[in-house]
Length: 130
View 1 (cartoon, helix red, strand yellow):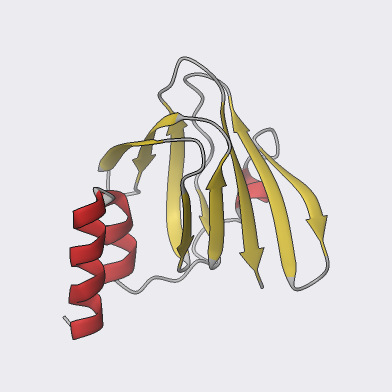
View 2: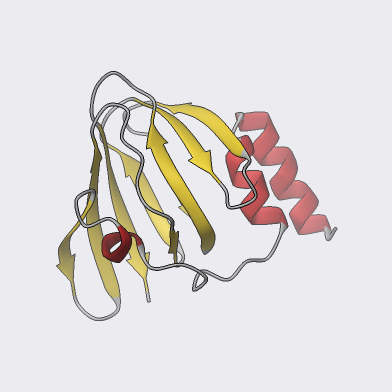
């Protein structure tokens, strides 16, 4: 593992964001599954785009799980508190809790499915770069 990867792993573990380790440590292509707004249009609504950047409002009902999808490099901002479960195609999952105002910029993310484990709606803004 490169030094920069080791530093990212330490940072991620220190912040309790174990889900992100999976995607930062192993290079991944984001074209192995449809984009979020194509796979689950009931969850992901494109609210603005200009050909280079796309802004998406994602809303999961309590207990809702979206379809398998991927993301290009993105920025994510949580509008609500959310208890989440991220499923991966190998049958594994990672649970986490995010608070209103949590934000992250992340590399491309391969095929996964997001589940809202909260008893209330989970809402996030996603900004994708092409």
